[in-house]
Image (cartoon, rainbow, N blue to C red; front, side, top):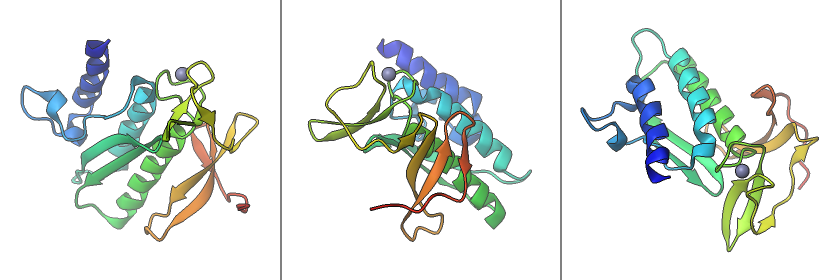
Length: 176
Ligand SMILES: [Zn+2]
């Protein structure tokens, strides 16, 4: 099992060398090697394709860190790019983070946040443990996700369409 999980990470890194910039001969040692389970492989592949498409001809970025935190994907990167590119990068990362919030980290099926012994994790019905947290989805397709604003000034609710892997804006007014 461990070697299988290692393989998907290395495959991802080798398929997107320009983003991961892995050390020669040891792709698994790339800084951005995903620290999450295999259920998020698909959304990470989508992310890498979007990031590559976001870059201009002479622009490069590097993925510093990809990890699970509080049940969701967190991605950090570095690089000098144009402001328009930065907004495309932020949108690509926001889509991946939104998808992680409603995708089982173990198997990739539709999931929701569960609290297990004080730890948050996103799990499908089959892999669920602990207590499910408030269901923010509507009809298993629209998910209200709290996303960090691109200017870092706090969070805003956005409506994520899991079927089409896109945001549907404007988001509804959040009820606290
Ligand atoms: Zn699952």
